[in-house]
Amino acid sequence: MNVKYYKDVEEEVVTKANSTKTTIRWLITKEDGPMHFATRRFKIKPGGKIGIHNHKEEHHIYVLEGQAEFLDDKGNKHQVRKDNTIFIPPNEKHGINNNQDTNFIFICIIPYLE
Image (cartoon, rainbow, N blue to C red):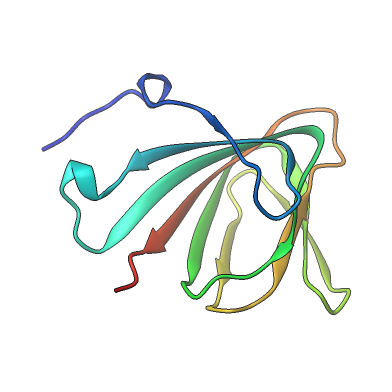
């Protein structure tokens, strides 16, 4: 068993996908023992965003705090808030805008691709 406190994990600034005001903590990685999935904690500050992008892997998201707008490259928008779950299939283009005045914090679980 491996137990950590999230603040003991380095907080890194997200620079990919034209992101602004966004940080990530890689909470559980291969170095911790899992062979199939990584668990990440994101924080998007007020006015921040993750630009539209896509990945080969699917995403499982659980919102811990706040609310934000998830969008895709076709103009679809979804308002999400605390306790919502979001599934993003492989290769689906997606982005997130935090247009609120509070932080938007979520857990994102992704599989390792080999």
